[in-house]
Length: 275
Length: 159
Image 1: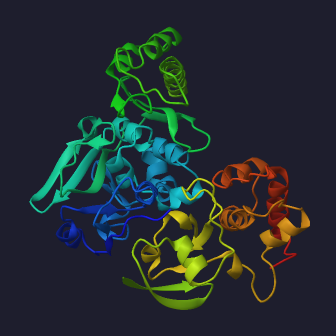
Image 2: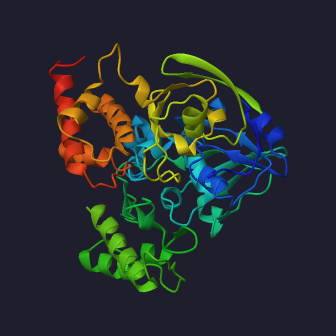
Image 3: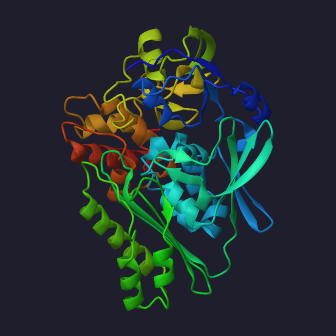
């Protein structure tokens, strides 16, 4: 499979990348979603702007009360990070379930959320961890709450000419518990359903799903029903999963089966962090 | 056209390539290193696995221009000084291949995995090879081959 022809640029700074990012250009990071799409000729950019090696987009650091993950940080770098294991262990747990080892070496968190595959793992985790997506364009920078970022089927709040530079997360308070539970499609290794759940020390919850609907979403119905985290409350909360939503249907899972799986994985996630 | 310089199996190559040329095609068609196989061509099967800057990656989903400035090792470069890599030796000893199509990718993945985890359990080996498909379904002997290699490396039988 051979792509249409395109030009290639590998800028070394975000500013250079923005200068290269004209109307017919696409950003290339890990490339493991974009390049297969190019090979199928589903996409025909005139130019690829390779941002995978821009130093300013890489790395994980703590900045006061926030953890900052550069957009071009790979899944492998995240799951291996001591900062992540200490403060956002759900990310190490979840990143280890993405694709396979070779894909985890190349794929990036920024690329994953920009692509916004409805079955990708990061969107649910980023929402549950209260991420803020920081983007840069020629006219400056802006921040987008993860809750508002995923707008539809492969759709995000990103505008033309914007590059995700980093994703910021509040450092969870001592005693916070979190998990990502996933039912994996065995060939593609995408999530048929994925549930990211956080339990804060005050007993409140943040719960988000991927794979279930056309975009990853926060489920406040589940969050509100979890109450005292008793077995009965968890049952009731899981039963509220994706209530009233339109669910994905594909040849792997019917709407009824997918809804069942989402409830089961919601319950597993809540049980895992209930004590 | 773009000019790239890639060090492949220890030897530096400078080539003029189209940006759309895949690394797998560059290795096979430009450098004639046909040990890297192209199976699914959709980044699922792992038969095109090579090492790029020390990491096992799928060369069918990487552009040759992305490898500019990188060091690449293919199956042809895994043996050193005429001595097979322990994983290659393991596949020979344990009959870790049937048709052989997935073998080079399996070996490249397993070699990278053993660098990170020299004493893996069987479950860890199976988990590590999730990105490599064997259409002959010969997984049991593949896992035994990797176990053989891990033992050989830890006992210092080879290397």
